[in-house]
Length: 471
Image (cartoon, rainbow, N blue to C red; front, side):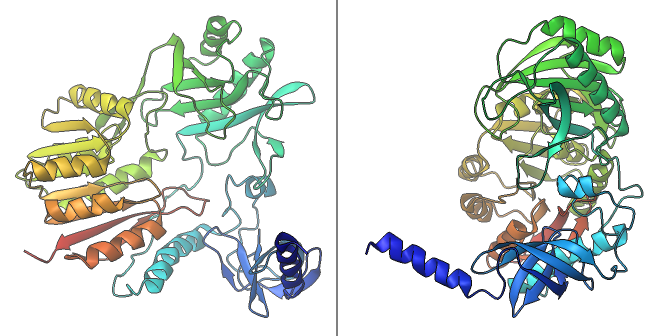
């Protein structure tokens, strides 16, 4: 008998030994929330993850999947409501993952995000680091200044919508709850024009059709709107006329692009685009600093909360005008330029060349001359700065979700800044990096400050301040 067959037989045997089986229905009481916002119930210590279920709720659950160590279930019946349940939530936003915490009252969402960080610190034996209450929003809906909406054909007609979580099932939608309402209105107008011009939507299975996504950005303060049509093919029939029609329907649309993504991929935007009508960039501002924004520029999607975060970073940096600051992962210069007005010199590094081009333009736009930007991987540029003898007073990190590369951390020790201000979008990698830094001459000063950058979702942004203890 072959080894693969024996392995499969043994695996099936182990599956039968799980306390629950697929398609089983059972009554459970939800005990906790996972970091993704799913309810967690346990059957003989075996965890079941359940969408739309909150702690203290007793439910009848249907097991959808039962793997060796954990399972997934759905709610068939709920016998009681948690005191933290938001009773007027809509299932479409939960099912598509647009607003996976919409069923949780906002104050409870803020506590949940604080607890996420606290639990990770506890697991890492960093209980001495405190976590402050999450700073939320007065209006935790309609905050996103950017939308990336998939487009498909439904009953022979082009539709905008979203996909159900963990599936390719397309759900037509027009009201996206967390987006700027004007973006939803522009989206409907763009959809109408695409239908009028009979432009076919993308077919994922056949890799055919034209329009894959509609990407819309709106300046929170400027009100300027940019529309980007992401296409499978280089050819967009009547592209110029189509763009002009969009602009005639929506007077605040000042820029229309075509972005070309011919690959079979889940990545939304391709690397090439062409301006179909209007201006090459839109403008907006953060804390009074102007920014020119291109189709693929990284610009924080929640302007109001971003301003609060950057204000907190500036306060934590305690700049007197004499400091040299490094801004790693600087993007289009949002943090760099906000600190440059109070620092002696700011150096920004970013691996995306287009972002650095925008950062330099934004420095000119604001009359800022003490900010210098480099195109490079942070780990490489940190090494060059260390070799050149640069002695920064402060390093600001705002990395992607994967956190800091080991080489970045090592070169930071060589640069030996007096202070590090770490802006994180992923508590898990933040805690990992804090372990390294606190074991190598830095200590966290004050509590970690979470910010609710993405209300109604499980994501949490935070700012941590560290100071060097070894002189």
